[in-house]
Image (tube, rainbow, N blue to C red; front, side, top):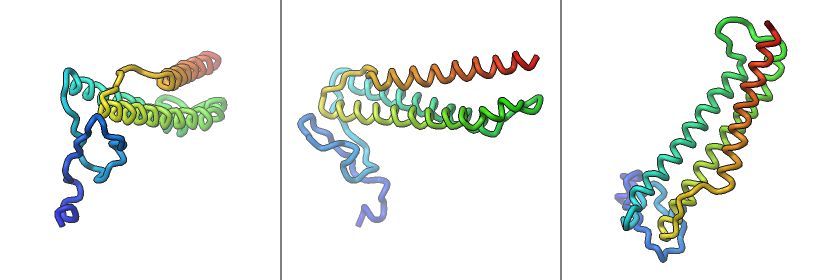
Length: 155
């Protein structure tokens, strides 16, 4: 009866290193996960959360830039024909990259928390993270160069 009255305040889930269950698929889904704090586990867990929040922040920024590009946001003058033509594809590219950042951050967080529960965590970035970060960085630099070059041709 208590679970029906308070669905968002369930009992904590205690993760044992020998447990074979996935911590994020254990019911109830809104339960806090409890880990034994040996050596620097609490510090590493907080670092993992900060990393996820950084990926989330990057994803939100990319989504905001995507919307701004798609609506051809300008402060001083009207957008040119080239800018209007490139607005939708570049905006969609940033939107897709925004979701890629969010998915990568969440997958990295879930994988690391699962390994913390099994006492096998190794805090480092993998090749998928490096690829997503490289693609996002290259896209940002390419769009900046593209916008600066179209702006220079107008003058």
